Picture 1: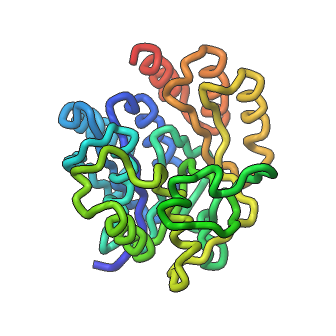
Picture 2: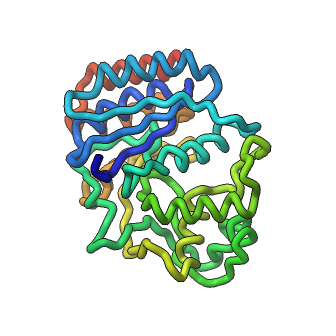
Length: 287
């Protein structure tokens, strides 16, 4: 079987309302190879698996190759830490060249494909600037693990991102060498961030398979709990001003009506049906 590319997303029981919208939007707007791995994390893995399967069956058209995995790795990590591990394991597929990692709150609202994540074979990284803090300040555990001292652009650790399987395997081997091959004993994901540490490791790797493109690229907009209504509305107003912004995020803890209404308006303005949006609102109000 030929090597291809894939998409990866991790879901747990509190993510189901977001996951339903994620699936609907991905089916509508993803324009490339349609291979998707969904990993179901704890708690309530068996029950959540059945709900995930139902959502997948209802929202994806024919032509998708979808694998749903029950997260059964033996570890002592909480769900947030565990999902970092799942993203790596699911991406280390011998038939996978590149994997794009999504989150359940990533609502794809414009056509997108693997080409959005590469520029002339370079792998794009969403970055940000800070005049007062360095990479080591933002990600001290990563810097300590790899004795990383050089100055590099600051990576945004929010999904989506793309990583290359063979380079990811090298990184994963290094993590295990540093922190132990028996991750059943881990209480948290080493370095605190799978993406920031993969990025730093690759920057340090003199034989890296991957070359990064850190030219300004910001594929996301959206809302988080700490933002004001005005700040979220500003995000919505800017969403269509920049062609690269194709994903609208809505964190599951954002339950304020005015904030939900902004997301609902953004979804509907990009062709997401009233039925899908209203179902999502009902679910997050009762979840």
